[in-house]
Image 1 (cartoon, helix red, strand yellow):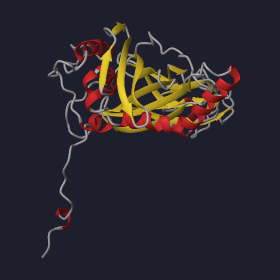
Image 2 (tube, rainbow, N blue to C red):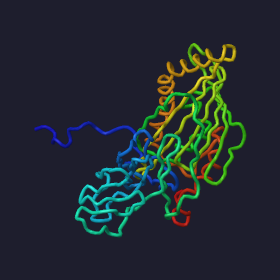
Image 3 (cartoon, rainbow, N blue to C red):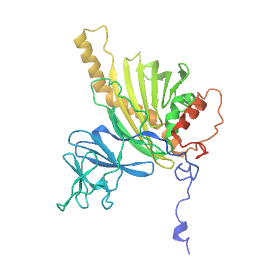
Image 4 (spheres, rainbow, N blue to C red):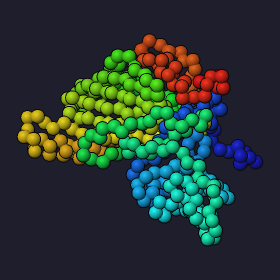
Length: 349
C-alpha cells in the first residue's frame, strides 16, 4: 500500500515569496502610480488594471484624452472593464447606458431621461509615455505632479512590465542603496555626488558608476536620478567614453499587500562625433542608436532584473541594521513616511 496521493508531491523548499510569507506589509503609499504605457491605450481601448487592492478602469477617448474611473457602473454595478468606447462616450456593457467624458450619463437604452448618477472618476495624468493614476489614503486631491521630461534620441521608447512580490518603497529606495550596486550589479565603484536633495514629494541624487565591459574596458557612467513619490524614478545616464545617453523610467505600482507591478521605459541616443561633418555625424549617431537600441535595452532590463529575486522574497526590515557604506538609506526612509497614513494610524512604517 503506497503513500496517500496527497503526500506524494515534491517537498516544498526555497525562499517563500513576500506576498505569501505572512510578514507585515507596508501600507499602500499615496501618490501617482503608473497603470499603463501610453501606447497600450489606443483610442477606444478600455483597460482594467489593479491598484492598491482594487480595479481601476482606464480608457482613451477619440480625442486622445485619457480617463480613469472606479470599475462599477452607478446604475446596477456592471464592471466597466467590459465597456466599449463610442466616440467620447463610455458604453456600459449591461444596459448600454452612455457616459460622457465628465462622467455624467448622457442617455439610456430605453429612450428614458438619463439618471443623475455619474461615474466615479479618478485623477489621471499621462506623461513621458506612461499613464499615471492618483490615489491618496485620505482621499486628498493631487497636490504634486509628475513633470514632462526631455525626450532624447529619435527612436521610439522601449518598455517592459513585470509582476512580482515586494513593496514599491524598496524599489525607489534602491537608488540610494549605494552598497548593492557593487554586490548585486557589479559596479567596481559607486559614488554619490553630494547629499540627496529632498523637496516635498521629490528627491534628486547624483551618482558616478565605475564599470568594465569586454572590448570596452573600464568606463564611467554619470547618473542623475529624480524620484517622484514612491511610484516613479527618472534616471539620466551618460557614458562619455561611448557617447551614450540613456533615459530610464522605473515605475513600481502596489497592487496587493506585498505585491507589485513593475514597469520600465528606456530611450537612448548617441552623441554626434565632433570630428565628422554635421550631416555625416548625424547619420553615424542615428545608425548606432538603431543598431544597438535592442541590445542596450536588454542589458538595461537585465541590470534591473538582478533585483527581482531580492524584492520578491525580502522582508521590509524596520529598523534596518545599517552599516557604513550602505548609502543614505535612513534619511530616505524618513522622507518616505510622508506617503503613508500617519504613524498614529499605522506604527509599522
